[in-house]
Image 1 (cartoon, rainbow, N blue to C red):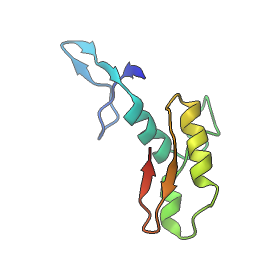
Image 2: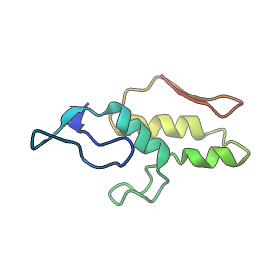
Image 3: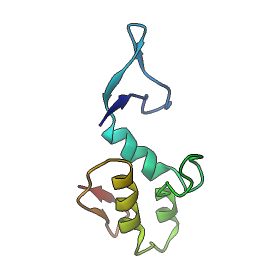
Image 4: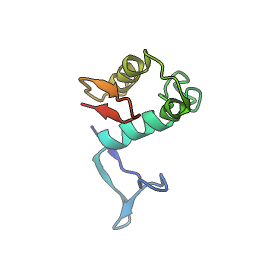
Length: 92
């Protein structure tokens, strides 16, 4: 996917040579979906995987499937989403 790039740390739009930077946005889309909770996106209130919730104890067995569905809805081609026993998220 091609779109406007944002800085990973500040989420500010990146500018180079007085113009907005355009490039591959697939990685930043995945990061935003994982880090946001449902309700944070006004246009799509059900979008947001809320990965922070996984740190609190019991993992939701449906979370990987729901996250995969959300990423596909955003245009990211995902084969699988998995959460290991130590909490590591793997996306292929």
